Length: 115
Length: 113
Image (cartoon, rainbow over all chains, first blue to last red; front, top):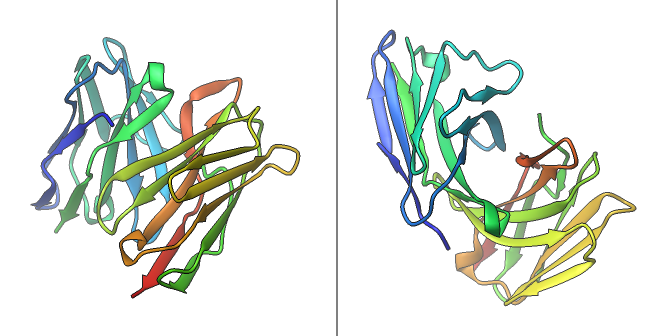
C-alpha cells in the first residue's frame, strides 16, 4: 500500500508554545489529506479536511485559529497546534486520500504531550 | 462525530480461534472499510466493501455488509497472537460528503498465545 509519513513521531512541549506536525504522502499525490485526533482507548475523530491550494474544512467544534492547517503541495500538509495547552495532549494522525483507490492511507501518528 | 458502534468493545480469544467483530452505522454509505491499529501506531487499511457488495474475502479476513440493517462484520479466522490490535470500521459520508471517513468506536482484540 501507499506510504504516509508524519514528523515528529512524538513531541513534548511547554504550555503556550506552538507545535507543527508534518504529514507527507511519499509515493502518491494527495489533493486531500485529513487530520484526526485520538484520545487513549478511543476512536479517531476527524478534525479537518485539508485541500491542496485552498482553505481547510474544519469539523464542528474544532477551532480553526488553534489548529492551523496548511496544504501547500500535493504531498505535504501541516498541522500547527498554536498556544498549546495540556488538554491538547493527544495522538494526532493524518491520512492522505488516494482517490483512484477510494482509500485513505494513514500516517503513523504524532503523540503530543503538553506540560 | 462517530458514525456508530462496534461490538464487542473488547474481545479476548485463544490463538487459533476465530474472532468476529461487528459494526453498526447510521447513515447511507457508498462503502465501508475496516482498519487495524496496533497500540500507539497509525492505522492499516484491511479491506473495503462497497454498498452493493454483501461479502468480501482477503486472506484470513472475511467481511460482510448488510445495508438493510446498516451493519457489517469482520471475521478473522485462525487467529494469531500478531492479530492483537484494535480494529475499526469506517464509513464514508454517503452522498453529501463521500470523501470523509467516519470511524466506529473500535474493538480491542487480544489473541492469547
